[in-house]
Length: 127
Image 1 (cartoon, rainbow, N blue to C red):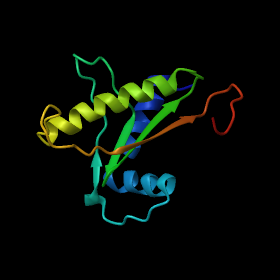
Image 2: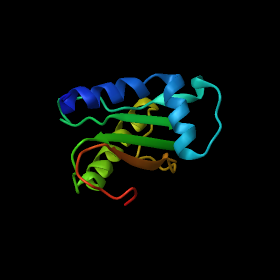
Image 3: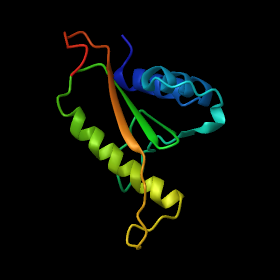
């Protein structure tokens, strides 16, 4: 059996390609974007100060699709998703040089979080 890190890495590598990333974005979001240049790969890297990384994060317009692959059930995935989103917004703001202490309201992408589970334990299709 493949180890969990390898499977997660394979999943991340597969959907971190712009063309395949756009395909899964369209499938899950019900959209029909055709230009991979519209997609920004926004996956968190394993930064020392955060000690967190997510599997795949895809940004198109003002929608941030975050995907996590799990082979074991973890009831804390919603909390982890919230942390990933907060960390992603730090990167989003920094990349665009946006100041949260300024007087202008900053619009941020809406989060969409999916956990894709393929473990041996039974789990509901949706939660």
